[in-house]
Length: 568
Ligand code: ARG
Image (tube, rainbow, N blue to C red; front, side):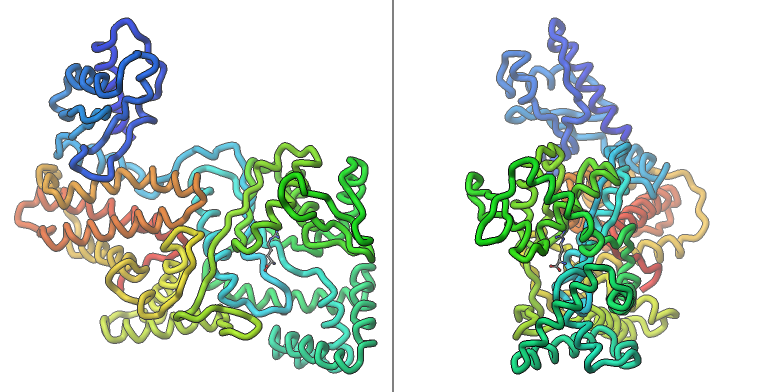
């Protein structure tokens, strides 16, 4: 970013002048901030880091530096409380910023922070034979966004869907299928039919407890790789995944691996042996556990008394497998906050096993989702299926579009982008840990902090540019010195920092917020200034700004997992 580099260079020169006997070993550019309030300048340099080396208070340093700054054509500076604030010459700031962005508009906000590093990103991780419901929306959407953000920051990413496809319930389901099901009904009814079979099994088992043994026997056959059991089990998985893939398709979500719990079933033996060899395994009521009392946690269950593995055992095997296969530098688990203890436990076990990379594993937790004020639950509360929700979103968006833009050509296509986008946006609007209450009126409102609002701004930029047509006047950046244009420019300059922070904190909402602020600032500019003016040079500058905004909004939307409709 040349403008930032130029300011950094200015500080360096000022420092040499102000403190000639001191060599300062600091990265001035990295320390430069963009203050949240423009009254504090376009850039601010915090002097606190120099305090020790110079043996001076930050306010004094700021003052001395300020007196030494001598670049009137670039900026003016001001010392305030230990900060050296820079106010750029507005026309220069506009020219520099726009030329930086427009040189490679699609790459604005990208970086090579992650080059040479690998991130495993596990998300969605749905359960086989269960319908994809709202409870799995956050993990899917947050994970997809994080994968895109990490990619954009130069990381090599591996996206993993850790399917919940192991457990005695699958034996019961096969047993029920053998007793009462038939292939055609399951093919047609899909996951719902499997659920019906499972529910019936549990009901009938109340009067016929021997069914439980049969169910267990079928699971044993899965464990032993019996061909008939495996065939049915795989088919159940395919049927579930077919449904899920439809949802993934609509959301634009992809996975590099679907290795789920069953994939690790034959890799847990090694974990158990290793735990035993390392003296970590203890017996407790017939079960094998790792005691975690010293770490203020209940024990981590490794083997049940019948020798069956547990959720944690498979997770330990999966973590080791991922390290050995992908050599990750970070391994993220996008999973609900409720599983916090589980993650802390098995991360601790990995650490106790001597794997120092355990610290590279991170539970990226998120809060609960409720729907129009009602808690979600599979047991007694409302169940909202994701495909229903996404269909409703598209229908509702279509209604609004029909009313607002009756002449739009591809209404269905735009309704898909807007409806799905509204759901994605609502999911990524606040920091992860905050509970989400999903309301249609809020999500699909075209004004305010919503997906449609940002998409609308993107389409507006496109429409301005189309109306302008071919223009070849030289831009006059004095046309961008007003407060509204400068506010837009500042947000454009901040955008790369926002993406970087989002990546560091695993918080996609930082991108949502950045792109929303940008849309708001651009709309303000749009309402207060004529973009297509008689003055062609002013028009050219405002069109450049529009182009940059359009491109950065598109990038931001992409990073959170939304599409950008050309017209709305
Ligand atoms: N399938 C689990 C669920 O739906 C989530 C799996 C989370 N990932 C993991 N590695 N344990 O609750």
